[in-house]
Amino acid sequence: MAARGIGFLGWNTRYRGHEPDFVLDRALVDIGVGVRWLKKEAGVEYVILLGNSGGGSLMAAYHSQAVEPCVRPAPGGRPAPSADDLIPGDAYVSRAAHLERPDVITKPALTVVAQETSIIGQTTVELLRARMADPNRPVQTVVVPVSLKIRGSGEVPA
Image 1 (cartoon, rainbow, N blue to C red):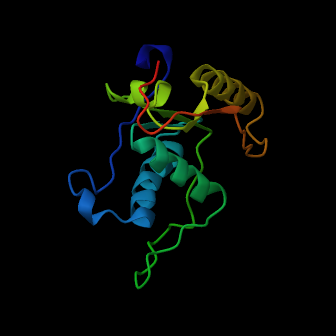
Image 2: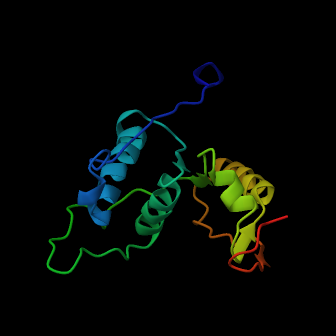
């Protein structure tokens, strides 16, 4: 990827291996340190947030907080420094990577709301190209079509 001019920074929060101690606003600040470093220190023009597995929801929370801060500390907790001053990514992609995860997503045993991964991928590329063409364009929220897959709780998917 580097030969094609594409950089990559693998980033974990301070909670890797310490999941019982997880605090959302502090984890978002940890991600923000990496995004800020890429943009301000390394001079990276475009940052694509890629959430893998459980990191998908974490990156979604980060991007949401960066665009419109709404995460507050747990009751009795102190606010994480900089939690309201995060730099948004230029695109966000969520990908489930566990071996069992594709079956859970594509052939769930329970009623679920399903999304087409090809539409998510195509939309991500389109948004990234638009952002590259106009870096000052406003942040855009896109809702991809969903469908309801109704199944009984003990039914085996076909």
